[in-house]
Amino acid sequence: MSDSTQPDVDVVVVGAGFAGMYLLHRLREAGFTSRVFERADDVGGTWYWNRYPGARCDIRSIDYSYSFSPGLEQEWEWSEKFATQPEILRYAQHVAERFDLYRDIDFETSVDKAVYDDDSGLWHITTSRTETVRCRHYVMATGCLSTSKLPELPGHGSFTGPTYHTGHWPHHEIDFTGLRVGVVGTGSSGIQSIPVIASQAAELTVFQRTPNFSMPAHNGSNDPDELAAVKAEYPEYRQRAKYSAVGVPADPPTRSALDVDEEERNQLYEAGWQIGGLGGLGVFNDLRLNQQANDTAAEFVRNKIRSIVDEPELAETLCPTDYPYGTKRLCVDDGYYSTFNLDHVRLVDLKKTPLERITTTGVETTDESFEFDAIVFATGFDAMTGAIVNVDITGVGDRTIKNYWEDGPKTYLGLTVAGFPNFYAITGPGSPSVLSNMMVSIEQHVDWIMDCIEHMREAGLTSIEPTPEAEAQWGEHVVAVADLTLYPKANSWYMGANVKGKPRVILPYIGGVGEYRRICDEVAVSGYSGFILS
Image (cartoon, rainbow, N blue to C red; front, side):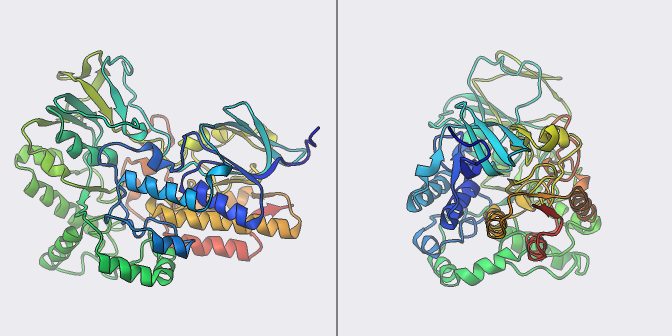
Protein backbone atom coordinates (compact mmCIF):
# COMPACT_ATOMS: atom_id res chain seq x y z
CA MET A 1 0.00 0.00 0.00
CA SER A 2 1.35 3.43 -0.96
CA ASP A 3 1.97 6.12 1.63
CA SER A 4 -0.53 8.95 0.96
CA THR A 5 1.84 11.45 2.55
CA GLN A 6 4.54 10.80 -0.08
CA PRO A 7 4.44 11.93 -3.71
CA ASP A 8 4.32 9.46 -6.58
CA VAL A 9 6.58 11.86 -8.48
CA ASP A 10 8.23 15.16 -7.65
CA VAL A 11 6.66 17.14 -10.49
CA VAL A 12 3.62 16.83 -12.77
CA VAL A 13 3.80 18.83 -15.99
CA VAL A 14 0.75 19.52 -18.15
CA GLY A 15 1.63 20.00 -21.80
CA ALA A 16 4.37 18.73 -24.11
CA GLY A 17 4.90 21.79 -26.22
CA PHE A 18 8.19 23.67 -26.14
CA ALA A 19 7.71 24.57 -22.46
CA GLY A 20 6.87 21.07 -21.25
CA MET A 21 9.63 19.47 -23.30
CA TYR A 22 12.34 21.77 -21.97
CA LEU A 23 11.08 21.42 -18.42
CA LEU A 24 11.14 17.61 -18.71
CA HIS A 25 14.74 17.79 -19.93
CA ARG A 26 15.77 20.06 -17.04
CA LEU A 27 13.96 17.91 -14.44
CA ARG A 28 15.78 14.82 -15.65
CA GLU A 29 19.15 16.56 -15.53
CA ALA A 30 18.48 17.66 -11.95
CA GLY A 31 17.38 14.20 -10.81
CA PHE A 32 13.70 14.96 -10.18
CA THR A 33 11.02 12.39 -11.01
CA SER A 34 8.16 13.61 -13.17
CA ARG A 35 5.12 12.79 -15.29
CA VAL A 36 4.20 14.84 -18.35
CA PHE A 37 0.60 14.68 -19.61
CA GLU A 38 -0.27 15.76 -23.14
CA ARG A 39 -3.74 15.60 -24.72
CA ALA A 40 -2.34 15.29 -28.24
CA ASP A 41 -0.66 12.17 -29.59
CA ASP A 42 2.66 13.92 -30.21
CA VAL A 43 4.79 16.81 -28.98
CA GLY A 44 4.60 20.34 -30.35
CA GLY A 45 1.80 22.07 -28.46
CA THR A 46 0.57 25.03 -30.50
CA TRP A 47 2.44 23.73 -33.52
CA TYR A 48 0.75 20.34 -33.25
CA TRP A 49 -2.78 21.80 -33.33
CA ASN A 50 -2.45 24.85 -35.58
CA ARG A 51 -2.16 23.22 -38.98
CA TYR A 52 -4.33 25.64 -40.93
CA PRO A 53 -3.24 26.66 -44.45
CA GLY A 54 -0.41 29.17 -44.30
CA ALA A 55 0.38 28.61 -40.60
CA ARG A 56 3.78 30.13 -40.00
CA CYS A 57 5.76 31.63 -37.13
CA ASP A 58 5.96 35.43 -37.01
CA ILE A 59 9.35 35.34 -35.26
CA ARG A 60 12.38 34.55 -37.44
CA SER A 61 13.32 30.89 -37.25
CA ILE A 62 16.89 31.62 -36.09
CA ASP A 63 15.34 33.30 -33.04
CA TYR A 64 12.39 30.95 -32.52
CA SER A 65 14.46 28.03 -31.30
CA TYR A 66 15.95 26.60 -28.13
CA SER A 67 19.19 28.05 -26.77
CA PHE A 68 19.94 25.47 -24.06
CA SER A 69 21.91 23.07 -26.28
CA PRO A 70 24.83 24.34 -28.39
CA GLY A 71 24.83 21.04 -30.28
CA LEU A 72 21.17 21.40 -31.19
CA GLU A 73 21.73 25.00 -32.29
CA GLN A 74 24.50 24.01 -34.65
CA GLU A 75 22.96 20.88 -36.16
CA TRP A 76 19.45 22.13 -36.98
CA GLU A 77 19.05 23.97 -40.30
CA TRP A 78 15.98 26.15 -40.83
CA SER A 79 14.92 26.33 -44.45
CA GLU A 80 13.07 29.66 -44.35
CA LYS A 81 13.27 32.99 -42.56
CA PHE A 82 9.81 32.43 -41.08
CA ALA A 83 9.30 28.73 -40.53
CA THR A 84 6.05 26.99 -41.45
CA GLN A 85 4.04 24.85 -39.03
CA PRO A 86 5.25 21.53 -40.52
CA GLU A 87 8.90 22.54 -40.13
CA ILE A 88 8.42 23.77 -36.55
CA LEU A 89 6.64 20.53 -35.67
CA ARG A 90 9.52 18.55 -37.18
CA TYR A 91 11.89 20.59 -35.03
CA ALA A 92 9.88 19.76 -31.89
CA GLN A 93 9.88 16.06 -32.82
CA HIS A 94 13.62 16.19 -33.48
CA VAL A 95 14.22 17.66 -30.02
CA ALA A 96 12.03 15.01 -28.40
CA GLU A 97 13.96 12.26 -30.16
CA ARG A 98 17.40 13.78 -29.65
CA PHE A 99 16.89 14.11 -25.88
CA ASP A 100 14.83 10.91 -25.52
CA LEU A 101 11.81 12.76 -24.15
CA TYR A 102 9.05 10.60 -25.63
CA ARG A 103 9.41 7.83 -23.05
CA ASP A 104 8.36 10.09 -20.18
CA ILE A 105 5.31 11.69 -21.79
CA ASP A 106 1.77 10.31 -21.42
CA PHE A 107 0.11 11.18 -24.72
CA GLU A 108 -3.64 11.37 -25.43
CA THR A 109 -4.08 12.19 -21.76
CA SER A 110 -5.44 15.43 -20.37
CA VAL A 111 -5.50 16.66 -16.81
CA ASP A 112 -9.09 17.23 -15.69
CA LYS A 113 -8.65 18.04 -12.03
CA ALA A 114 -5.90 19.13 -9.63
CA VAL A 115 -6.50 19.41 -5.88
CA TYR A 116 -4.00 20.58 -3.28
CA ASP A 117 -4.13 18.52 -0.10
CA ASP A 118 -3.42 20.75 2.88
CA ASP A 119 -2.46 17.91 5.19
CA SER A 120 0.16 16.22 3.02
CA GLY A 121 1.24 19.31 1.07
CA LEU A 122 0.79 17.36 -2.18
CA TRP A 123 -1.15 17.97 -5.36
CA HIS A 124 -3.55 15.22 -6.41
CA ILE A 125 -3.76 15.25 -10.21
CA THR A 126 -6.62 13.39 -11.91
CA THR A 127 -6.29 12.60 -15.62
CA SER A 128 -8.75 11.76 -18.38
CA ARG A 129 -7.71 8.13 -17.90
CA THR A 130 -9.08 8.35 -14.29
CA GLU A 131 -5.57 7.95 -12.89
CA THR A 132 -4.68 10.06 -9.84
CA VAL A 133 -1.05 11.07 -9.38
CA ARG A 134 0.34 12.70 -6.23
CA CYS A 135 3.11 15.24 -6.74
CA ARG A 136 4.96 17.94 -4.83
CA HIS A 137 5.06 20.50 -7.65
CA TYR A 138 2.42 21.08 -10.33
CA VAL A 139 3.31 22.99 -13.53
CA MET A 140 0.90 24.17 -16.22
CA ALA A 141 2.88 24.31 -19.46
CA THR A 142 -0.29 24.60 -21.50
CA GLY A 143 0.58 27.62 -23.62
CA CYS A 144 -1.08 31.01 -24.08
CA LEU A 145 -3.01 30.25 -27.28
CA SER A 146 -4.24 26.71 -26.80
CA THR A 147 -7.94 27.08 -25.95
CA SER A 148 -9.77 27.96 -29.14
CA LYS A 149 -12.75 30.29 -29.14
CA LEU A 150 -15.77 29.48 -31.25
CA PRO A 151 -18.11 32.21 -32.50
CA GLU A 152 -20.85 33.06 -30.02
CA LEU A 153 -23.68 32.99 -32.55
CA PRO A 154 -27.14 31.43 -32.69
CA GLY A 155 -27.20 28.29 -34.78
CA HIS A 156 -23.58 27.36 -34.24
CA GLY A 157 -23.31 23.69 -35.13
CA SER A 158 -26.29 23.71 -37.47
CA PHE A 159 -24.30 24.08 -40.73
CA THR A 160 -24.52 20.76 -42.54
CA GLY A 161 -21.27 21.15 -44.48
CA PRO A 162 -17.74 20.82 -43.08
CA THR A 163 -16.54 23.46 -40.62
CA TYR A 164 -12.97 24.06 -39.53
CA HIS A 165 -11.33 26.09 -36.76
CA THR A 166 -7.81 27.33 -37.37
CA GLY A 167 -6.87 26.38 -33.79
CA HIS A 168 -7.61 22.66 -34.22
CA TRP A 169 -7.26 21.93 -37.90
CA PRO A 170 -7.58 18.35 -39.24
CA HIS A 171 -4.36 16.39 -39.61
CA HIS A 172 -5.03 15.61 -43.25
CA GLU A 173 -4.90 18.01 -46.16
CA ILE A 174 -8.09 19.97 -46.84
CA ASP A 175 -8.66 20.82 -50.49
CA PHE A 176 -10.99 23.77 -51.12
CA THR A 177 -10.69 23.54 -54.90
CA GLY A 178 -13.93 24.55 -56.59
CA LEU A 179 -15.74 25.22 -53.29
CA ARG A 180 -17.63 28.22 -51.97
CA VAL A 181 -15.83 29.01 -48.71
CA GLY A 182 -16.62 31.44 -45.92
CA VAL A 183 -13.90 32.58 -43.51
CA VAL A 184 -15.02 34.23 -40.27
CA GLY A 185 -12.26 36.28 -38.65
CA THR A 186 -9.29 38.36 -39.77
CA GLY A 187 -6.81 37.97 -36.93
CA SER A 188 -3.42 36.36 -37.38
CA SER A 189 -4.66 32.91 -38.42
CA GLY A 190 -7.20 34.41 -40.80
CA ILE A 191 -4.64 36.70 -42.38
CA GLN A 192 -2.26 33.78 -42.90
CA SER A 193 -4.86 31.34 -44.23
CA ILE A 194 -7.00 33.58 -46.46
CA PRO A 195 -4.45 33.94 -49.32
CA VAL A 196 -3.92 30.16 -49.39
CA ILE A 197 -7.64 29.35 -49.33
CA ALA A 198 -8.24 31.98 -52.01
CA SER A 199 -5.75 30.22 -54.28
CA GLN A 200 -7.99 27.13 -54.21
CA ALA A 201 -11.60 28.19 -53.68
CA ALA A 202 -14.03 29.01 -56.46
CA GLU A 203 -15.53 31.71 -54.24
CA LEU A 204 -14.16 33.08 -50.96
CA THR A 205 -16.15 35.35 -48.67
CA VAL A 206 -14.26 36.89 -45.74
CA PHE A 207 -16.25 38.20 -42.76
CA GLN A 208 -14.33 40.96 -41.02
CA ARG A 209 -15.38 42.47 -37.70
CA THR A 210 -12.16 44.40 -37.00
CA PRO A 211 -9.50 45.14 -39.63
CA ASN A 212 -5.92 44.41 -38.60
CA PHE A 213 -2.55 45.98 -39.21
CA SER A 214 -0.32 43.50 -41.00
CA MET A 215 3.29 43.69 -42.10
CA PRO A 216 4.72 41.84 -45.11
CA ALA A 217 6.87 38.83 -44.26
CA HIS A 218 9.12 39.08 -47.34
CA ASN A 219 9.77 35.44 -46.57
CA GLY A 220 12.29 33.31 -48.38
CA SER A 221 15.18 30.99 -47.83
CA ASN A 222 17.58 31.82 -45.06
CA ASP A 223 20.77 33.51 -46.20
CA PRO A 224 23.52 30.88 -45.62
CA ASP A 225 26.03 33.60 -44.74
CA GLU A 226 23.69 35.17 -42.18
CA LEU A 227 22.95 31.76 -40.66
CA ALA A 228 26.64 30.98 -40.40
CA ALA A 229 27.34 34.35 -38.79
CA VAL A 230 24.59 33.85 -36.18
CA LYS A 231 25.71 30.30 -35.41
CA ALA A 232 29.27 31.51 -34.96
CA GLU A 233 28.17 33.88 -32.20
CA TYR A 234 25.10 32.12 -30.84
CA PRO A 235 26.09 32.46 -27.13
CA GLU A 236 26.46 36.24 -27.42
CA TYR A 237 23.44 36.47 -29.72
CA ARG A 238 21.22 34.60 -27.25
CA GLN A 239 22.47 36.69 -24.33
CA ARG A 240 21.42 39.86 -26.13
CA ALA A 241 18.01 38.30 -26.76
CA LYS A 242 17.54 37.53 -23.07
CA TYR A 243 17.94 41.19 -22.10
CA SER A 244 16.17 42.73 -25.09
CA ALA A 245 12.68 44.23 -25.15
CA VAL A 246 10.91 41.35 -26.90
CA GLY A 247 13.39 38.47 -26.85
CA VAL A 248 15.02 39.24 -30.20
CA PRO A 249 18.45 40.93 -30.38
CA ALA A 250 18.04 44.52 -31.55
CA ASP A 251 19.40 47.93 -30.73
CA PRO A 252 16.52 49.86 -29.12
CA PRO A 253 15.46 52.99 -31.02
CA THR A 254 16.43 56.24 -29.37
CA ARG A 255 14.36 58.84 -31.24
CA SER A 256 10.73 59.87 -31.16
CA ALA A 257 8.71 59.68 -34.34
CA LEU A 258 8.08 63.38 -33.80
CA ASP A 259 11.79 64.26 -33.78
CA VAL A 260 12.04 64.05 -37.59
CA ASP A 261 10.09 65.61 -40.42
CA GLU A 262 7.47 63.69 -42.37
CA GLU A 263 9.74 62.96 -45.33
CA GLU A 264 12.50 61.39 -43.23
CA ARG A 265 9.98 59.56 -41.07
CA ASN A 266 8.31 57.95 -44.07
CA GLN A 267 11.68 57.01 -45.56
CA LEU A 268 12.50 55.16 -42.35
CA TYR A 269 9.08 53.50 -42.31
CA GLU A 270 9.51 52.48 -45.94
CA ALA A 271 12.89 50.90 -45.19
CA GLY A 272 11.26 48.98 -42.33
CA TRP A 273 8.36 47.90 -44.55
CA GLN A 274 10.83 46.50 -47.06
CA ILE A 275 12.53 44.52 -44.27
CA GLY A 276 9.13 43.35 -43.05
CA GLY A 277 8.22 41.26 -40.04
CA LEU A 278 6.90 42.35 -36.66
CA GLY A 279 9.71 44.80 -35.98
CA GLY A 280 9.62 46.47 -39.37
CA LEU A 281 8.32 49.82 -38.18
CA GLY A 282 10.09 49.72 -34.83
CA VAL A 283 12.39 52.58 -35.73
CA PHE A 284 11.10 55.01 -33.09
CA ASN A 285 10.87 54.67 -29.33
CA ASP A 286 7.41 56.11 -28.67
CA LEU A 287 5.01 54.40 -31.09
CA ARG A 288 3.23 52.57 -28.29
CA LEU A 289 3.47 55.42 -25.79
CA ASN A 290 2.41 58.53 -27.66
CA GLN A 291 -0.79 58.72 -29.71
CA GLN A 292 0.52 61.41 -32.04
CA ALA A 293 3.65 59.36 -32.79
CA ASN A 294 1.56 56.23 -33.23
CA ASP A 295 -0.71 58.00 -35.71
CA THR A 296 2.24 58.46 -38.06
CA ALA A 297 2.93 54.71 -38.22
CA ALA A 298 -0.76 53.82 -38.46
CA GLU A 299 -1.28 56.20 -41.38
CA PHE A 300 1.83 54.87 -43.13
CA VAL A 301 0.38 51.33 -43.02
CA ARG A 302 -3.07 52.55 -44.07
CA ASN A 303 -1.48 54.25 -47.09
CA LYS A 304 0.25 50.96 -47.91
CA ILE A 305 -3.12 49.19 -47.83
CA ARG A 306 -4.58 51.88 -50.10
CA SER A 307 -1.72 51.43 -52.55
CA ILE A 308 -2.14 47.63 -52.63
CA VAL A 309 -5.93 47.28 -52.81
CA ASP A 310 -7.33 48.45 -56.14
CA GLU A 311 -10.84 49.45 -55.08
CA PRO A 312 -10.71 52.55 -52.83
CA GLU A 313 -13.80 51.79 -50.73
CA LEU A 314 -12.63 48.24 -50.11
CA ALA A 315 -9.19 49.53 -49.13
CA GLU A 316 -10.76 51.81 -46.53
CA THR A 317 -12.73 48.88 -45.09
CA LEU A 318 -9.44 47.02 -44.63
CA CYS A 319 -7.80 50.01 -42.89
CA PRO A 320 -7.83 49.90 -39.07
CA THR A 321 -8.91 53.26 -37.66
CA ASP A 322 -10.31 52.74 -34.16
CA TYR A 323 -7.27 51.53 -32.23
CA PRO A 324 -3.56 52.44 -32.21
CA TYR A 325 -1.06 50.63 -34.38
CA GLY A 326 0.51 47.66 -32.56
CA THR A 327 -1.99 47.51 -29.68
CA LYS A 328 -3.72 44.52 -31.21
CA ARG A 329 -1.58 41.56 -32.21
CA LEU A 330 0.42 42.72 -35.22
CA CYS A 331 0.19 40.25 -38.08
CA VAL A 332 2.76 39.16 -40.66
CA ASP A 333 1.37 38.17 -44.04
CA ASP A 334 2.19 36.84 -47.46
CA GLY A 335 -0.05 38.68 -49.93
CA TYR A 336 -3.03 39.23 -47.63
CA TYR A 337 -4.17 42.66 -48.81
CA SER A 338 -3.63 41.90 -52.51
CA THR A 339 -5.86 38.83 -52.17
CA PHE A 340 -8.85 41.19 -52.13
CA ASN A 341 -8.05 42.29 -55.68
CA LEU A 342 -9.09 38.85 -56.91
CA ASP A 343 -12.50 38.70 -58.59
CA HIS A 344 -13.65 35.64 -56.63
CA VAL A 345 -12.80 37.11 -53.20
CA ARG A 346 -15.31 39.25 -51.33
CA LEU A 347 -15.03 41.11 -48.02
CA VAL A 348 -18.09 41.55 -45.77
CA ASP A 349 -17.83 44.33 -43.19
CA LEU A 350 -19.53 43.03 -40.04
CA LYS A 351 -19.54 46.48 -38.48
CA LYS A 352 -22.01 47.55 -41.15
CA THR A 353 -23.92 44.27 -41.43
CA PRO A 354 -23.32 42.13 -38.32
CA LEU A 355 -23.43 38.34 -38.38
CA GLU A 356 -26.75 37.15 -36.99
CA ARG A 357 -26.68 33.36 -37.15
CA ILE A 358 -25.19 30.22 -38.61
CA THR A 359 -27.67 28.37 -40.82
CA THR A 360 -27.81 24.87 -42.24
CA THR A 361 -26.48 26.19 -45.56
CA GLY A 362 -24.18 29.02 -44.49
CA VAL A 363 -24.49 32.25 -42.52
CA GLU A 364 -26.82 35.21 -42.31
CA THR A 365 -25.96 38.83 -41.68
CA THR A 366 -28.45 41.60 -41.00
CA ASP A 367 -28.41 42.28 -44.73
CA GLU A 368 -27.87 39.03 -46.63
CA SER A 369 -27.84 35.22 -46.60
CA PHE A 370 -24.73 33.37 -47.76
CA GLU A 371 -24.51 29.76 -48.91
CA PHE A 372 -21.22 27.90 -48.54
CA ASP A 373 -19.75 24.47 -49.13
CA ALA A 374 -17.36 24.94 -46.17
CA ILE A 375 -16.85 27.43 -43.35
CA VAL A 376 -13.56 28.29 -41.63
CA PHE A 377 -13.69 29.90 -38.20
CA ALA A 378 -10.55 31.96 -37.60
CA THR A 379 -12.01 33.26 -34.36
CA GLY A 380 -8.97 32.99 -32.14
CA PHE A 381 -8.46 31.86 -28.58
CA ASP A 382 -9.38 32.38 -24.96
CA ALA A 383 -5.84 33.64 -24.57
CA MET A 384 -3.48 33.25 -21.62
CA THR A 385 -6.07 32.15 -19.05
CA GLY A 386 -8.35 29.73 -20.91
CA ALA A 387 -6.16 26.63 -20.68
CA ILE A 388 -5.59 27.21 -16.95
CA VAL A 389 -9.16 27.89 -15.81
CA ASN A 390 -10.50 25.06 -17.97
CA VAL A 391 -8.82 22.62 -15.56
CA ASP A 392 -10.55 22.26 -12.21
CA ILE A 393 -7.69 23.52 -10.01
CA THR A 394 -8.35 23.76 -6.27
CA GLY A 395 -5.81 25.21 -3.85
CA VAL A 396 -5.78 25.90 -0.12
CA GLY A 397 -9.15 26.11 1.60
CA ASP A 398 -11.11 24.86 -1.44
CA ARG A 399 -10.23 27.98 -3.43
CA THR A 400 -10.48 27.34 -7.18
CA ILE A 401 -8.45 29.28 -9.71
CA LYS A 402 -11.56 29.82 -11.83
CA ASN A 403 -13.34 31.60 -8.97
CA TYR A 404 -10.21 33.37 -7.76
CA TRP A 405 -9.67 34.79 -11.25
CA GLU A 406 -13.30 35.75 -11.74
CA ASP A 407 -12.42 39.46 -11.86
CA GLY A 408 -9.19 38.90 -13.77
CA PRO A 409 -6.06 36.78 -13.27
CA LYS A 410 -3.99 37.32 -10.15
CA THR A 411 -0.37 36.15 -10.18
CA TYR A 412 2.99 36.97 -8.74
CA LEU A 413 5.47 37.43 -11.61
CA GLY A 414 3.02 35.70 -13.96
CA LEU A 415 4.38 32.46 -12.55
CA THR A 416 2.66 31.68 -9.24
CA VAL A 417 -0.66 32.24 -7.48
CA ALA A 418 -1.38 32.98 -3.81
CA GLY A 419 -3.19 30.11 -2.10
CA PHE A 420 -1.84 27.59 -4.60
CA PRO A 421 1.43 26.28 -3.12
CA ASN A 422 3.99 24.73 -5.47
CA PHE A 423 1.88 25.69 -8.49
CA TYR A 424 3.51 27.33 -11.52
CA ALA A 425 2.17 28.63 -14.83
CA ILE A 426 4.77 28.93 -17.57
CA THR A 427 4.32 32.21 -19.51
CA GLY A 428 1.16 32.88 -17.52
CA PRO A 429 -0.80 36.13 -17.28
CA GLY A 430 1.32 38.87 -15.79
CA SER A 431 4.48 37.80 -17.67
CA PRO A 432 5.76 39.05 -21.06
CA SER A 433 4.65 35.82 -22.81
CA VAL A 434 2.68 36.77 -25.96
CA LEU A 435 4.49 40.11 -26.28
CA SER A 436 7.80 38.33 -26.59
CA ASN A 437 9.68 35.69 -28.50
CA MET A 438 7.98 32.81 -26.70
CA MET A 439 11.04 30.58 -26.83
CA VAL A 440 13.07 33.07 -24.80
CA SER A 441 10.26 33.52 -22.27
CA ILE A 442 9.68 29.77 -22.00
CA GLU A 443 13.33 29.06 -21.25
CA GLN A 444 13.49 31.88 -18.71
CA HIS A 445 10.44 30.57 -16.84
CA VAL A 446 11.59 26.96 -16.88
CA ASP A 447 15.04 27.96 -15.64
CA TRP A 448 13.51 30.07 -12.84
CA ILE A 449 11.24 27.21 -11.74
CA MET A 450 14.14 24.76 -11.77
CA ASP A 451 16.37 27.09 -9.75
CA CYS A 452 13.51 27.49 -7.28
CA ILE A 453 12.75 23.82 -6.70
CA GLU A 454 16.46 22.94 -6.57
CA HIS A 455 16.91 25.63 -3.94
CA MET A 456 14.01 24.14 -1.99
CA ARG A 457 15.49 20.65 -2.20
CA GLU A 458 18.89 21.84 -0.97
CA ALA A 459 17.32 23.83 1.88
CA GLY A 460 14.97 21.03 2.95
CA LEU A 461 11.87 23.07 2.05
CA THR A 462 8.66 21.55 0.72
CA SER A 463 6.36 24.51 0.02
CA ILE A 464 6.48 27.85 -1.75
CA GLU A 465 3.67 30.26 -2.52
CA PRO A 466 3.45 34.02 -2.99
CA THR A 467 2.04 36.28 -0.32
CA PRO A 468 -1.25 38.01 -1.17
CA GLU A 469 0.56 41.33 -0.74
CA ALA A 470 3.29 40.48 -3.26
CA GLU A 471 0.68 39.20 -5.69
CA ALA A 472 -1.40 42.38 -5.35
CA GLN A 473 1.66 44.60 -5.79
CA TRP A 474 2.70 42.72 -8.92
CA GLY A 475 -0.80 43.07 -10.34
CA GLU A 476 -0.75 46.80 -9.67
CA HIS A 477 2.66 47.06 -11.35
CA VAL A 478 1.46 45.19 -14.45
CA VAL A 479 -1.52 47.53 -14.78
CA ALA A 480 0.54 50.65 -14.06
CA VAL A 481 3.04 49.77 -16.79
CA ALA A 482 0.24 49.06 -19.26
CA ASP A 483 -1.43 52.37 -18.42
CA LEU A 484 1.73 54.17 -19.53
CA THR A 485 1.14 52.76 -23.01
CA LEU A 486 -1.59 52.81 -25.64
CA TYR A 487 -2.48 49.11 -25.23
CA PRO A 488 -5.58 49.69 -23.08
CA LYS A 489 -7.11 51.73 -25.92
CA ALA A 490 -7.69 48.60 -27.99
CA ASN A 491 -10.37 45.96 -27.47
CA SER A 492 -7.84 43.20 -27.99
CA TRP A 493 -7.31 39.70 -26.67
CA TYR A 494 -4.36 41.21 -24.79
CA MET A 495 -7.12 42.87 -22.74
CA GLY A 496 -9.39 39.81 -22.70
CA ALA A 497 -11.89 41.74 -24.83
CA ASN A 498 -12.46 38.98 -27.40
CA VAL A 499 -14.27 36.63 -24.99
CA LYS A 500 -17.77 37.50 -23.87
CA GLY A 501 -17.93 38.02 -20.11
CA LYS A 502 -14.15 37.92 -19.63
CA PRO A 503 -12.86 40.75 -17.40
CA ARG A 504 -11.25 43.55 -19.40
CA VAL A 505 -7.77 43.67 -17.86
CA ILE A 506 -4.29 43.66 -19.35
CA LEU A 507 -3.03 40.08 -19.52
CA PRO A 508 0.65 40.26 -20.54
CA TYR A 509 3.38 42.27 -18.82
CA ILE A 510 4.44 45.11 -21.10
CA GLY A 511 7.64 46.09 -19.27
CA GLY A 512 9.88 44.06 -21.59
CA VAL A 513 11.65 40.71 -21.54
CA GLY A 514 14.96 42.00 -20.19
CA GLU A 515 13.46 44.11 -17.42
CA TYR A 516 11.16 41.25 -16.41
CA ARG A 517 14.11 38.85 -16.25
CA ARG A 518 15.99 41.27 -13.97
CA ILE A 519 12.99 41.47 -11.63
CA CYS A 520 12.64 37.67 -11.46
CA ASP A 521 16.37 37.26 -10.84
CA GLU A 522 16.30 39.83 -8.05
CA VAL A 523 13.41 38.00 -6.37
CA ALA A 524 15.39 34.74 -6.41
CA VAL A 525 18.69 36.29 -5.28
CA SER A 526 16.96 38.00 -2.36
CA GLY A 527 15.86 34.63 -0.99
CA TYR A 528 12.55 34.61 -2.89
CA SER A 529 11.15 37.87 -1.59
CA GLY A 530 7.38 37.97 -1.78
CA PHE A 531 7.14 34.23 -1.18
CA ILE A 532 6.34 32.10 1.86
CA LEU A 533 8.73 29.13 2.02
CA SER A 534 8.27 26.37 4.58
